[in-house]
Amino acid sequence: MQEFFYILCYLSFLLILGVIIKSRFKIFQELFIPSSIIGGIIGLFFSPEVMGRISIFSISNEWIKTISLLPSLLIVPIIASVPLGMDFKIKNSKGEVKDILITSFILFIVTFLQLGVGYFVNFIYTYILKKELYSAFGAELNTGFAGGHGTAGMIGKTLQEMNMEYWNTAQGIAVTTATFGLVGGILLGIFLINRACRKGETALLKSPSNIPSELKRGYYQDISKQSSLGRETMLSSSIDTLAFHIAIIFSVCGLSYIILNTVKKYKIPIISSISIWALAMIIMMIVWQIMKKMRLEWCVDVKIKSRISALFTEFAIVSAITSLPIKAVFTYFFPILIMIILGFITTWYCIRYYSYKYFKNNYPFERAISMAGTSFGVFLTGILLLKICDPDFSSPVLGDYSLGFSLTALIGPLLIILSISLSIGYGPLIPLLLNTILLLISSFIIKRIDISI
Image (tube, rainbow, N blue to C red; front, side, top):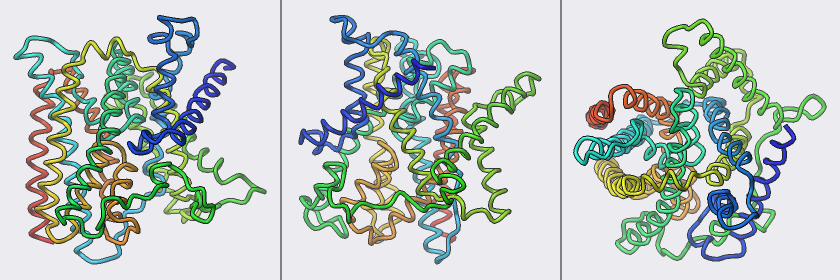
């Protein structure tokens, strides 16, 4: 336990070091690289696979083994917290409902497309080039791109529960795609914004140079501009508000582990095969609905919940990159490279096509760039790119995009696990066909929504 505490101290130091380095070097600011990635790369440098080969100044293999487990552990509270405080009430016109639904299905289509591209690469390598990859290879594209570094632990956790020896390699590849997706997505996003601005496609941004310096640095020095973390729903005389929210999340996680261990003990079919994070998310949905029935919504603040999830994500990112199995990942260098390149090309043109088709004179570029940011990096990447185009969030894009993303955030991870299970049982062709069919169905549904609402 004491060693685990030391590891947390080490990871915290890497995060602080990342913040300091980003604040001092313009290149990291211009590229919008998060401090957690910088800290993780420094941690990777001092890992046994890098510094351990040339010097005694590296962390131990025992530490790396523990650190590699953190992303798969932290993904449980990260995913479990998603339904807490979620509100799908839409109070405005049918037009808003239509925009939200179309946004949701575009993000669903991107999910199906990225999973399809990943398993397409697996299929080509396995059956045409006769260079067999491990059976689950392919899910890392969507997990890394749209899920991010934190969600990379989901693949590791799932494959670990399935007793797959390559779980750490798959987690490492997901971290690799997440890093390329996040950095490449920001660079591509800024390039596309500058190009669209010059062509007059941006509705609000008139000059591509008007990017606030605070966005680049990653902090506000002016205290008056610093936003609040959230409401204090509890009084400190009873319990700290932050501790209360964390207690809800961890209580649900603990309950999920108890239920899952019980059903596995008695070998209850179907339920015993469900992943722990998926079960935790389902239980949180039930807990939140019970709280709403009891009129206890007032004691949960979504902003605080989001900050807790972001806290876990920061540590998941720095630990995932620090423990990246470089040698194993380089074994799959070419299929990873092909998967990433195809992922960038197909994702952007897919989002652009549907955005310009169904949003025409309704901020099509702003909607496309926000969805692209999320589909390459994480939700906050989409907000970052949207803020460059719409600094004051005066358009309806943020609201539609946030609610649309919430719907996909609930269902997307379950689809990833389904694809992994199918690929392990039947090879890459079945999940490829499944995601292709789902993509076509979603395209048809979008068309019906556009006509009927």
